[in-house]
Length: 169
Figure: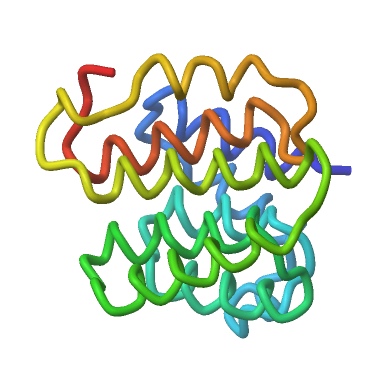
């Protein structure tokens, strides 16, 4: 059951300052040793690390997950973390890998992947709010041919927009 982690995440999202008990239940559920070693499978530990503002472990876990689950989803997490940590080299390397991944697909899925990476690239390289392709982002989020769900794409767009200081969109 994910009730301990769900309770913890809800308490953090709702701004509740007393998360001690919820944190203990989440750690019990996730496995404290696995969390400390970044060896837990799945993406739930990443949510925990992000809520705890533990970017070092979040980055380590994401790099491990990319080895076992390569793809745009994993790379999008890594790009967001690299940008948050202001690690330009890692961000550039990750974006380059994302561009290669997007070009390697055929069919409608490949088209969406290419457009998704194009949108991410535009956000990353934008110098002003006017350079954000808002209509393009909206159209991408309405396209249901994507392998990545609209909610995942929306999360990555908003996380990277916020990291880059574009909070108006």
